[in-house]
Image 1 (cartoon, rainbow, N blue to C red):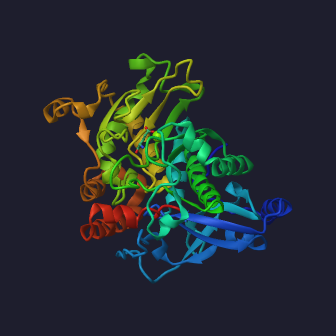
Image 2: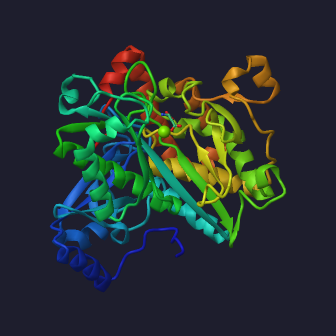
Image 3: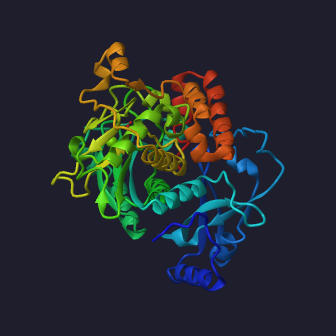
Amino acid sequence: MTTSPHLGVMGADEIDRHASNLRGAGVRLLRGTFADAGGVLRAKQVPISRAGAFHSPGLGASPVWVIFCIDDGIAFTENFGAVGDMRLRADLEAAVDIGDGVAWAPLELFDQDGAPMSFCPRGILRGQQAAAETDGLSVLAAAEIELVLFGAAAASGDAAAAGSGGPAYGLRPLMEQAPFLDDVHRDFDDAGLAIEQLHAEYGTGQIELSIAPAAPLQAADANVLARILLGRAARRHGLAVSFSPKVFAEGIGNGAHVHLSFWRGAEPLFSGGDGPHGLTDDGGAIIGALVKHMPEVVGALAPSLLSDARLQPGHWSGAFACWGLENREAAVRLVAGTSGNPRGANIEVKCIDASANPYIANAVLLGVALKGLADHDPLPPEMTLDPGSLSDDERAANGIVRIGESQAESLDALEASAVAQDILGAGLMEALLAVRRHEVEIAKEATPAELVERFRFAWSV
Ligand code: GLU
Ligand code: MG
C-alpha cells in the first residue's frame, strides 16, 4: 500500500461503507484525536451518523488547538492566535472499533477550503512516509510503551504506585494487576492492535508493552490508540496510568523507545552488508545521521519540562548521541538480526519519551534517516562501552555528545537546526517552540518535585 502525501476525501459510497460497517458492529460514536505540539491528545466526537461530516469537510477548530500547552496555557505566536479557523478531518480508513459502542480515528488539520495545513503533525509524517516510499524504501516502526500504574486517588495527590510496586521484571506485579492487564490484552486484541510482549519494568509500579511494527504513520496511530485503550482499561479498575517521562522525583522514568527497520525492495539495510555487524552502507548512513543530528532534534523527541530529568546517564534512556550493538546507554541501540531475533536487524532509538508527539517523533526519525541516505553519511565509530563510564575528555575524544540536559538548550538547538526546519516546516516549528518554551517558563517557577507531581498525568487520557 502506498501512502498518499495528503489525506484524500472519500467518495460518498466509501464513507457510507465505512460508517455502515462501524454501525453494524454496534458503534454509536466516533471519537477523533489530535496529538498537539505538547504531546497532549485533544479530541472531538460525533454520533456515528456524522462520521461522513467528520471526515469531510471536518469539524471546526481554532488555530489555538496547535498552541495549547500542557497546563492549558496558550502560547500565542505571530501566526497562531484567536483569529482564523481550521477543519479537523477524521481519517476513516484508520478508524478502529474499540468496543463499548465507540470507534476511534486520528485527525488531520485542513483549512476551510479543504487544503491541508502545512503544520499538521500527522500530515507531516504522512509526507515523510510518502517520500520514503517514493525513494523505494519501506520502513517499519514499533513503539515500546512504558507506564506507571497508580490508584485512582493519585489524581488528587496520593502518589503511591498501585500494588506493592515490584520486583522489577517480577511475576508479582503481573499477578497483582491481572484484572487490569487481562482487560488490556483483550481490548488490544479486539481492536486489532498486537501486543508483542508485556512485562513489569524496573521502576516502581512500572509496566512495559511492545506494539507490533507497522509503517511509521500507522505506528504513531497505534501508539495513540494504545494510550487510549490503556487509559480506558485503567479507569474500569479504579487505576490511573502515567506515561510521564518522570513519574517520581527519584528513580527511573518512562521511555517511549521506537524501533526502526528499513528495506530497499526485499533487502534489509541493517543486515547482510559489509559493515560492522552486517550493516549496509545505507544502514550505516541512517545510523550516522541519527547520531550526528540527535543533539539538534532531541528537543522534538524528549521535548518536555520533565524529559531532562528522565534522560540521565545510567537510566537506559540513551542520554548520549552514539550507537552500539545492544548498547542500552546509547541513543541508538543496534539490535542485530540473529537467529534469536526473527524480526530481523533493527535500531532502537532510546532517547524518546511519551511527552513527544508520536507523529512529530516518527517524522523526525524518518526525515533524519532520509537525509542520511541522501547525504551518504558515514557510520561513526561504535561505542562498545557504557558512554557514562567514560570521562568527559574520553567522550570528547570519541565525539560523543550528551543530549537533552536542558530543555531550553535543546529547544535552541532545534530552532537552529536546518534539518528540523526541513522536516517539520516553519509553521510547526513556530508552534512547537512556543509551546515548549512556555514549559521552560513554567519550570522556572517550580521545584523538580513539584513539576513531577503537577504533570504526572499530563500525557494520560
Ligand atoms: N525506563 C527506561 C527509559 O526511561 C528504559 C528501560 C528499558 O531499556 O526498557 O527509557
Ligand atoms: Mg523498558
